[in-house]
Picture 1 (cartoon, one colour):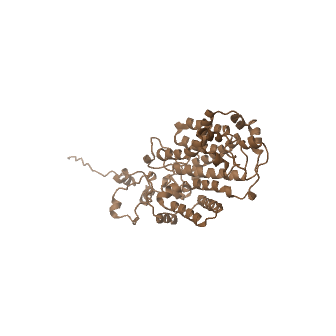
Picture 2 (cartoon, rainbow, N blue to C red):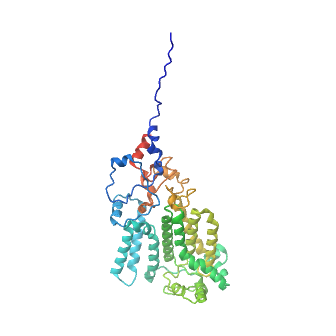
Picture 3 (cartoon, rainbow, N blue to C red):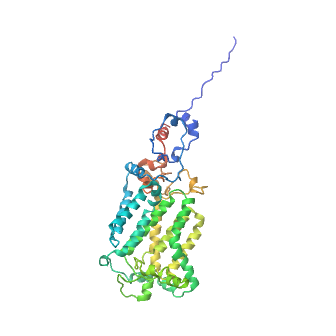
Length: 442
């Protein structure tokens, strides 16, 4: 009998779901949880997908792209579909503080004030300008709040504390550092103190913002602007509710009671005006809106917040940041503007705000990324310490590892992690419905 060898060729069975994963469109596309924003299109046409578009590979949009539309209707469309959360109270507070500050400014000019309010509202509603003015709204509100505080009636303000800060200085440190540092001065020391206190304090926030905008992760500058603005507004509020005399008042008037209406003093900065023969600080400090706002020191708070953000984005510059903070803290006491306890109060406020922002909303650095345009996705918050919070909000174990934010939608910067699963990395808000359905099938 002749033996016949029969070879039967059979198709290798691949487990269900693997065929789709091995398709060219899947291999060439970015994983779903890292997909880039597709939510907002520059086109005002219908967003319906045609059969031809369904066959084509999905294209992605840079996460660092900037808005270019000036159509206010685009913002109204986003507001209609927006998921509101408790963090939106911040905008209510900012609006109320802005309107109150404009209202108390004298003289009464209703048309000018209304035009100013409507002008800024238009900047908040146009997408091209909103991406800059909405995150920085707390800063503009703080500046307006600080300027308009001079118009608060004296009879409703609290009494001015003259002895509290010197007493705290003695209790905490056993000596008055401001008196020690300012007891001997020299023109060279005046210039050295002037650089951080008179120049760096006003120019460094803009410089830090520009550097972080180019070299840090997308979304870092909005977080810095919000932190800076809210911290400054909080500092002014404390200064108004807890007015204290600075060291220059003790040197000029001793511990005599202070009263509203008294002029401020440039203290050591008057020597800078005399040195250069100009009036840079004498008039501005003499007519300061809050002459008795010694505690907390916003000079120290601003420098510390800037140092914390720069150290987070550029760890190699941590030593330089520590040097600058030490430099400006010495300058505040050398120029006789603050006690050491004022610096401590500013440091506590700055670090507390940075700690909260870093834990929940601050974008994390990615190795090998030098510019913002190199980022394809963004991870936010200190996720190692935030696992319990993600699980409490309904995110799974994978979701607790990454959370993404659409930084092109400025309205969701502070509250995206509250918006159910669309904030988690495992279910990106940028993923299409087909991507999510495929992941569920797999």
